[in-house]
Image (cartoon, rainbow, N blue to C red):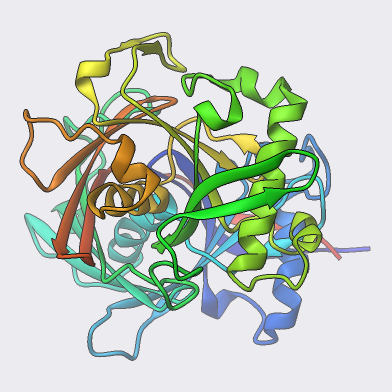
Amino acid sequence: MYMQKYPCVYMRGGTSKAVIFHEKDLPEDKSLWDNIFLKVMGTPDVKQIDGMGGTVSSTSKIAIVSPSDREDADVNYTFKQVDIIIPRVDGSANCGNISSAIGPFAIDEGLVEAVEPITVVRVLNTNTNKIIEEHVRVKDKRAMVHGDEVIKGVPGTGSRIDMYFEQPGGAVTGKLFPTGNKKDIFDVPDFGNIEVTVIDCSNPIVFIRARDLKIKGTELIELNNNKEVMEYIERIRCIAAEKCGFVDKWEQARTMSTSVPKVSIVSIPQDYEDMDGNNIKASEMDLCCRAVSVGKLHKAYPMTVAVGTGAAAKIPGTIVNEIACLSKNYSKDIIVLGHSSGTTEVDMKMNGEEVLKGGVTRTARRIMDGYVYVRD
């Protein structure tokens, strides 16, 4: 028995990590990819001990990059979310944090000409067919790593990357509001009726009020141990998946649509202690929110969910808009989200209820490059 090796780069993008491949280094037969990616991550195994995965959704990710033949894009980028416990690779949606690594990767790998002091990289995300424009600081023909930018959920500082998700509405379903409504009532088996908002903006998201789950909304990883509430959340997510057309019956979403829709639990601004033990004040945010990804509390807040949350906060009639207390301390375009690792600003450009673009700031860096070995 032999092992196959593939050239790759291991990078952090925002609060996530991924193994990044050049498409040319993978088999031409794309039907072989999922099996390779499962072995790269060490799935299925709760420890992912025989692969690169880090046992949580934010560290079990794959990106594939190639030059783009489109006039409005420099590179194509495909994202794959690798499950941990079940042998599934989901390519139905994008990851905003990993998106932030694609610009620096493209520059350092020579896919885009490095221009100082800032190189603009236009990335076509093939999962959603949407453009992400990334402004990457460059020095000596390389993407800068060191800088003063602080990303909540990432130790230290890094070089600022400004990202703009262009025309993000309907990224997966083709509709900003996939159900046709800004609010829906779901009849959740064994739990009863609950009001939610389902939006598709950078990624499909179902928003739930914390109070309707009978929780505070400031919970951290202890929420994972509340089996009843987590089951309630999963059933809501599964029903949203059916409403979005991802599955025929909601029960199928547990295994057939594990990555989308995402879940955001929203509440009014509140004081709380974040994952790093920092005191976060209600006065610092417009909205308190918690994300659930692949069945677990997200330890920060996915950037695609941040853009969708910002959009929902700006559109009257959503439960997010009803809850958000838009701060007078920021310009009208800025929404400040208080999440598990601190606060994040989202810059929303709107034309009425049309989402023109959503801007976020990230940092990214190369951690390792070389070959990853997988068993035949």
